[in-house]
Length: 165
Image (cartoon, rainbow, N blue to C red; front, side, top):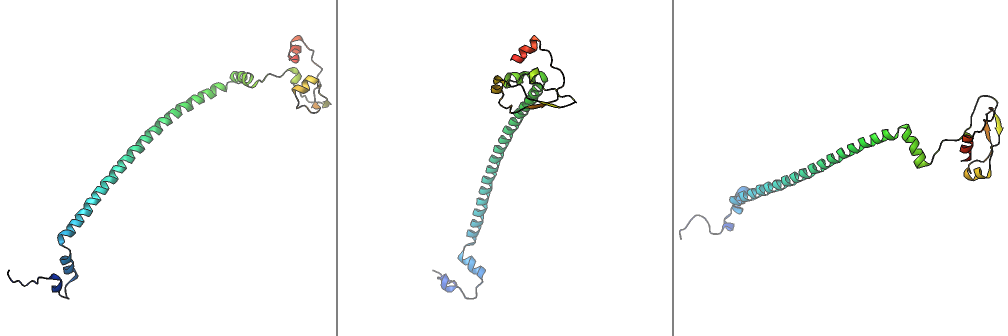
């Protein structure tokens, strides 16, 4: 073996006045630093690729949700238009009258149920209450005031039939 200037044992041959950079180079090979940097770059590239794929997937899901909501909006607009037409149809006077009779059991008041108020002297009259009308209308609790000063209307067969109902 040839004799060289370099000592065989590196640890014992390091002088005390060496630079930190030289120690670093001796301790860690320069090639290993490049390997670490390249590994970090590769990890960053893989991580950004994964994040990009996740973002694209989220975009597709959000776009599908948006399309579903647009379809639902169109259906609701059609339903709204249909309900507006139905509302206009049922707001007609004949429709209201027929539904009031059919669904609510309402009826036109008879002459007996009408109270005519005219200007003049007010007189208090006790209502004519029979046993049947008390059972049918328990809300009548006392006399009603009336200002009807017109004479009694003659009863015909039609009005007598309506009053009997």
